[in-house]
Image (cartoon, rainbow, N blue to C red):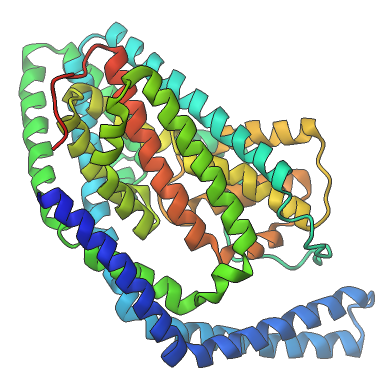
Length: 462
């Protein structure tokens, strides 16, 4: 009953947030948005003029640069002013996410240590880990491939015909450079406490795997550690219950801020792209549920129903991390044994972000289409494989996908400035892919539980 009430309150908060955001956009935010739009038009015009001037030492070039600096200053001032007006709403979601982040790192560590230790010997860990990675790699390839197929089918950027930008133009998104060192940095840390403080989930997972295996290996002394970790995990789960009670407020604040800032007009401006991307997510959902049905039979629909409030939380806050504690609880209620849940689910948050995977190929190729940059089938497959590697360990938080895309598209001479085409609507897209990440991880855990014979078939949906 409580769970159902929470889902209802979240849904009400969603609707209320849209209404409040629309009203706030028209009454308070509109003057700032008008000035921002005018400044953006001026900056774009000046950029086009600057690109045409070959002599960068000429008086005309310097004058245009001064004008551009003035417009950038106007844009910055109005952006800051708009953000200050939205602060009462954004604080609701920011502080909720802070509370969630406070929980996630210790929860991942304690539950994964307990899960690995309970699994027992390394051969068993290897067997379960192998099945888990088989699902993760397959799901990642399917998600990336589906995004590639759909963006080639829909061609959402082919009608934009945007000229290539000058080399000095870009976005404020920090690139995630493609290098072996950067890739390995996602996995290993020189300080476990630093990883905990920064919520580096993949690094925490790697340390927890070592810690769990070592704990199981020392025998009786290890049982004391396991019992302590299990108790700490239960304490954190209790804290989770308190924090989740605030979810509707966070949802209201997040949705209100998005609609107030962007307005409902952004839905119509990018309606085609948004519709095509969400249709892709819908197809991906059908694929995930169908494969889950092949393993779980009719119970797959019970699972989806049980995690609907977790999906709503991820959708509303644009982060799958926010739903992690709730998914953990619901999977155990579904009948998955805690040792499997504690082992598979934390790994999923680093290796199995299905919605984000599909978005990466979809968005990268959309930008290429917008600039009329042709990519061969071989280049697209190469991009898919690069994204598959560089994406592992990305945080389940807003804009994390953009960081990886920014570092990957440069490899194919696609302007990083093209990300500006997506920044405005990224919050709307992030909502869908975060919700999909939750579904994919929950399904993976349930399927691995079934494969291991660790799924209680007698549990009935609550």
